[in-house]
Image (cartoon, rainbow, N blue to C red):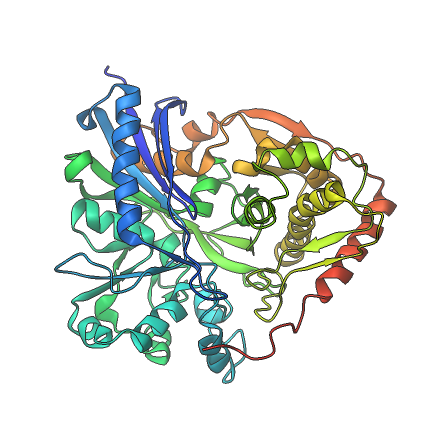
Length: 498
């Protein structure tokens, strides 16, 4: 039998990658390119969709070249993507009406505040599983329809198409206008029970249904690719965090993973049950494979994790590369009393406070660069602890361990800090590119490269585990200090901007 290869396009917040996997889930080749981050106003974050498409084609070509393969040797290609980022483009020209509005962008705070006046922040939660927040795509689309001349008329005619990045890439590759259930569940526009666009929410936000993509499962053949991947079946789409859950083989209810990237995202598989959250988490679709029933999850979303390390590098010049922060933080035994709450885009789970902004508290003349570096790493660990606690409350499941992945898991100090503040073992898999791996798994299932989830579960192998070493009383004392620091971020933004 000929070797079977699957390509995964992983379109993230800061870069685009193509990874080619073989039948065992091993990486055959990889290429990655960053794209521009635009911050035209305070709180605004934008991407250029055309640049993302160009980068996508470039990394696919390079990955194929490095593997010494041609497109025809691929069994399928899967797509995983930054989720809530919204793009609107013209059906006929392919040109975007405006830059993509990134998930971190907070310009829709006025729209969210106005919507919350009638029914509160949880106005739509029963339908879509999400609170009203600038994070999600629906308000971003409403803002574009309000601000871009001529867009509403084009949208009502069906000439203007909306999509998250998966939809945009699938359209560029195949000409089909569609998305999968995981990405649709992050727009605030999909009904979790029906897995279709919710007419009531669309009416309230004033979003024409004609501009929305068809919702499909996460694992099926959407069409054949053109261009650089000519003839290859495009066979999966998953939001990045859902893809990581699949790549971590968390297929049973009660299994959880945490991904450490630009932000930090913990997902807990809840099976076929839609579990509402009373603790500030999100209810979302975990995945749906073909005609099988959808699997749901609880999610805790943290806006700033790796982005804080980037900020120390790019804005303060405290380090010259992200990898340096571990050595710098190891020069001290503790944080020197400093807590760093990176509410740069407000606070996501479990608070959902768009009025919050970042703070560093506990500063004395004793504090140096190393203390601040350690406090920055601890910020990710403590934010994860808050989500971890909320997840146990909502699910009634006592989490005995945590599987971790993403770029930051190479930082052994952070992983030890994470185990210490959770009080449970933290395990990194042998293949840490679990987001791309999950997209490859879903595409491979669709075309028969893998038989079922049991086969995929057998491919998961642990690389390293960290055990908690911090005394419980010390952990809880520091946790109280962290929560006190969080309260100092509240109410900083007094008025929602337009």
